[in-house]
Image 1 (tube, rainbow, N blue to C red):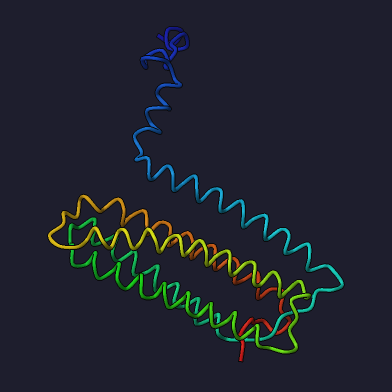
Image 2: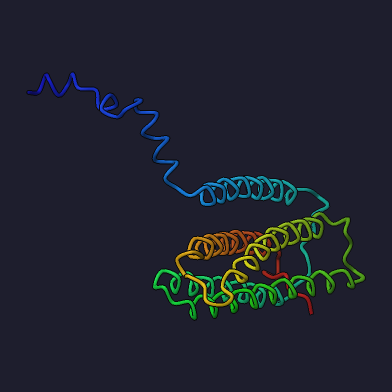
Length: 213
């Protein structure tokens, strides 16, 4: 019995071999889910490279910590509320509650737009400060990091808008559940990325803050 088990080749029990078994496992995921995972992997590498470059520039003689502010704390709180609202919509979709889906998506979108508006105000306030120059690598990285994150959130807002349109009228929750769940995953991902970037910005500031008066 033992020798027979040792001679067994489990992959031969699957038609086409072990490669086909793994291919079928991957194919069982919706194409949209696979696409989102691949996209998030690329974005993760992009921000990791940016973080590495940021850390390297902090050691340069031209590096000067940026101005102190509390505005980004508010923006971070708004993004957290947006992510929580999207989770509310996702949970409602799993329960088949279209009302909860609509309310969660609406709240998530409102908080996301508020976050974007807060970021724009932060850029404007920083640009109006006479003693802050773009030649300072810290300022340049601040713009690069926050704008790049905002662009990715803007792409998420486009997907959010399409999902909102699907909830109009007498819709079947089952038909929009995947869209809601993917939006929620992306929102959580962007929140995690922002928290890492937020901590990175704070770590380079002697006053522990990027908040503009």
